[in-house]
Length: 179
Image 1 (tube, rainbow, N blue to C red):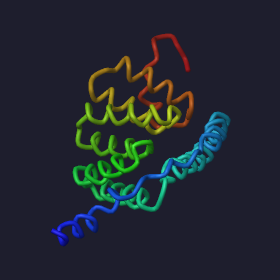
Image 2 (tube, rainbow, N blue to C red; image 1 turned 120 degrees about the horizontal axis):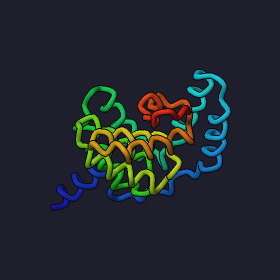
Image 3 (spheres, rainbow, N blue to C red; image 1 turned 90 degrees about the vertical axis):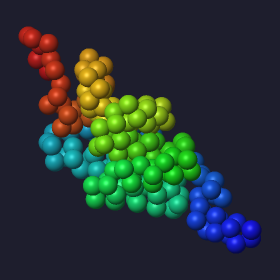
């Protein structure tokens, strides 16, 4: 019995730990989003967007960062189904960390499980309503679900924060309206 308890404790270190609050990057995120609105080139916007990603992936602690990095590596390696398990652990450990939900949503999206992706994107946006990537991901997910009118509304919200998003090419404008 003692051996089983020891094995359980070693196998699940996050269960015994408590996730600290996620870093508050609202002010920095706001500055970057403001700068995106005045960016003059795609290169300038790309550099600013990298800054947003640094903020979003700034995990609450080393345990959360390891889970996030492992899941993202699996996504980059083309293994989204396995990545979901890493993000499940991250979300269970840090339920107030938006990026855990956003990355799990991306893993679901890659598997074409749009309904599950939408749930996680809504969770990420409840935590960080100005998470541009989650907004654009939600627009794409809604398109995947055939909910194009809603997708356009969400896409416009994402573009209001970052007019340089590649997804702007998916924006449908009514006839006679120029953007």
